[in-house]
Image 1 (cartoon, rainbow, N blue to C red):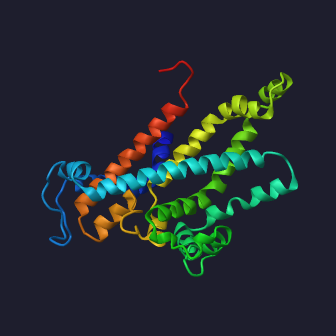
Image 2 (cartoon, helix red, strand yellow):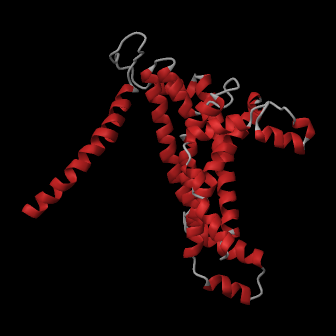
Image 3 (cartoon, helix red, strand yellow):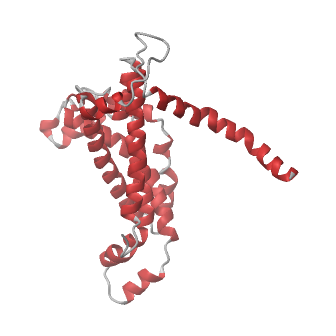
Length: 293
């Protein structure tokens, strides 16, 4: 009995920390999402208004609709580029060698850079007058010389995707490399003995066996892409116009520019529900057993 009590006492500090820093704030924000609370009117939460904030966001708010569209486009492009690039780099670095080993060692460096710093760096690199990427693009394609990338809605979104992929592809490459190292070699060797080409081995043996790892990579990248905030602030500021306003940035704008804490909490919970749904959907889609429902 004493051992059991001691076990619970030992985990009590960690449990209290989780409750105080995670569960309690989430519960408060959930309650706030059902209240009318604007800081411009009162410093204390207003009356309960039910699901009015959620209904407004999902049916009658053009800013939410725009942010949802931008976020969806960003996630699809970003996750696709990241997963395919990570898979390609991992396959190239799979072979043993000094160059491959050195490359693996430096792959973690981009991920160690702060997201906010990545946004600031890319803002300078895509500067129309002195940006290195602007100069390089102008040297390769003359009509792009001096092009103001961040003033074009489509180009600004692509620059945002590029900056995020630059940070995440190396890390995800290491994850895929770990998955490749764990794969048994016998199926690939058997396929080669049967006369399969390297492409056929890759398509029919390696990638299917690697699907659980790619699913994890896709899930993680989707979650982080949906939460994109730092680089939006430091790279595009949500512009031009509202072309790069993501849902996470919209929550920030509603709460700290419009001071509508109730509505901001509702949008934040919609984003949270979306994260959970997509994670479950990815797992069912990619890890579905053959012949399963």
